[in-house]
Length: 515
Image (cartoon, rainbow, N blue to C red; front, side, top):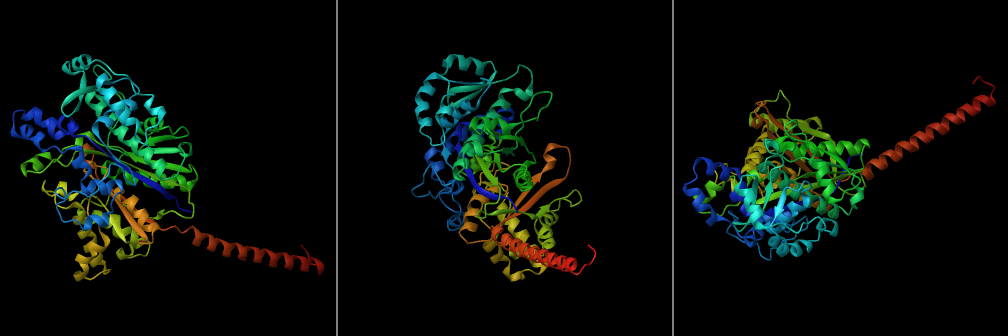
């Protein structure tokens, strides 16, 4: 039987100071145009924590509203606060930067994170109140250091500063004097990924009703790479994160595929569980500091707040079929092959139309499609348009071409089978997986039966190939009962045949026939 999705989690860390100091758009600008208007104007466009919590797409991400609710909000979203917004949601939370900074220190096992002792004293009790942070994690909090010592590391360019409201409160030191793979910048980026992933792992275990010791395998599918000069992307984020989260019975590994990574990892997880190798596998991905404020120039230019101010994280729990939860259907897999080509219509055809055709299904047999779910509030001002809608139009056009719908139904198709994007532009984070939590809820509630997750990736970014990439799979309602019923009928038939054969054999013995 197919594996099931027991639960999921989605978390955000609001990190406005990291936008300014660590996002690559900003770090690049400080090199090429340090005295330009953008860096001077940027601080005026940074959102407060309250504004980030009150932001509609963020509330959808953590589960306090559904994607269907967002459809009813007039675009743009950033100027329409969410009423009665909360830090905590069904799937996770939006953690403020001071607490997240301390969580990074908790996740550090090589003493590269140094925090100001006054900052630790002011923040420690706040973090301890978080329902996911237990005593074993709080025991990892260090008392802190003199700010002058931290300032010295930053001034000597041995460390990346950690700031709260533009005030230095700590640093991430380099882990090696000359190895660029262990530089302060890379260590900062990797620890931010690790902390956001750990937070999502903790929520996923809770949301799925698991004990920590139930988890047997973890797959990390973020876009960062940890290693040293001899194996710069060796990993293993997954096991490092499982350690901090207290998943004592888990091992794990990393899977990389740019934005398509999560979908590849989920197919791998579902296959491992279906094969019986592991009973419970967690697929996780943390946030990417490089992408903070990625489209900041466009947002500032248009007088908007910088909306890319949160690190994202998610975890999906894949387990043995329990007869209840939605299944990952491994019988219907889409794949962009080497020979597919990079034309958008070919990509969508290979990921959507081809697997459905092999299964004898129409495009309209899928209730909801979840491709790249980027928030249009972020991408449209930057000139990238509405990414989810562009995908839905291509899928709809394929449906017209195949005769699944009429041309006049195209506009309605995008409404009925599509969603409004709400995910932060954190690379792998928006690629299909944000829909799994609310989509599984909709399946469990009987509102839909099939959800297609579509992961797409730009492999050419690594300068190793010009190929595009992508895989897809379907999540559907649980079929274990139907399969058991079919299996039961077959078993009865087998028993009947055996009984008849034994009867005939006995009769032949009685008649003195040869055996």
